[in-house]
Amino acid sequence: MKYVKMGLGIVLAILILGYLRNSVLHFNDFKVTYRAGGRALEQENLYNKTDRHYIFKYSPFFAVAVSPLGEIPYSFASILWLFSMCLCLYYIVRMGKFVVMGDKSPPKYFYFLTIVLTSKFLAREFWLGQTDFLQLLLLFLFINFYYRKKEIWGGLFLALSAMIKLTPLIFLPYFLYRKRFLLIIYTLAFVSLFLFLPASIYGWQRNISLLKDWYLFMSFSSPPLLAVDLNQSIFGLFLRLFTPSIYQVNILTLNSNLVMAIIYALIIISYLFLLFLNRPARNIRQQLIGQRETLEFSLLLFFMNLFSPLGWVQNFSSSLLAYMVLVYYSFTTKFKDKTTNIFLLLSFILITAINFETVGRRISDLSLYYSFITWGIIILTLALFRLRLKRIA
Image (cartoon, rainbow, N blue to C red):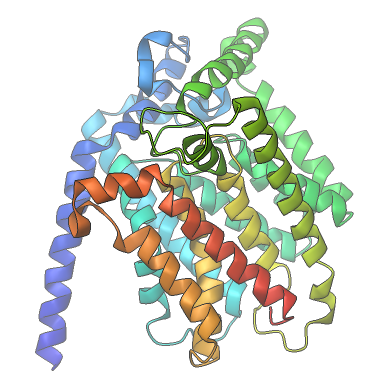
């Protein structure tokens, strides 16, 4: 049995290394980051229409932060980036485990089951060489300092994560509700600092111009992509199902302005419901999760991509904490909560099990058109809502 396990481990290692090697050869999104870093070194414009689909959409500060990569050959930089992604994921999982169960030892197969359930997101992240792991690591560092009530450090890491993508700013209304005013002040102060820090390289006027370009590129590049199949945010779901698109899967044909109004109404209602759920947290009968606000943070990590105009498949690697909560709860209850088990199974089928390799291209494409991943995330959201309403976590 010992040799069987060793053999399986070797085979698995070979498969993983082979996949990672192919990822480095692909790495389309990292090419955008690498090019932006090189442009920052040369004080060139970061936002060019000629880049077409591979337009740099992050902040000028992020380009300056990754500019050292531009000093080394692309082949070595891509390997370095891959290594950093692995390191980020390791610490994300490690900090997630601490947030969920503290110093307790994780149940057997806890990590394995969590990785399997999130494998679609993680694999695509590695394949593209995206920035989500780095952003998620910064958010977990923020959560760590939040629990320790270190407002300055919390604000620093939340602001840093927002310099990659602005979506983490969805945490701020929650902190306003929680009356964590000092944390909000520090976060906004650091955001302001990071926005203007590139002026030390580009000069004041050129930095202002870069910030304007960043805003303009974000404004004009997002609308044409809202109904694209890989956009699994709530915007993609509603626009594909209720307005005409190239995929021809709409079940109704509604005015696009009405659909957008419905989307924003659902976002507001969902966020208000999250705030409402914070109240029962004070009366939880038996605290199974390490920290009381872990459930809220799990939901906010969902929401920052689900409610973003563009929520690409790989962005939902932010679901890692939510899966950790639900998997740990299932292990703790010895899988006796059938409803939670069904929620996890349904999300696994909708998100992970249905893919090109298992069902073929046609069904895989249809699953994207009909937003199966979005539905899977919504099911996980309901599972977390249920735990709080039952005062379990």
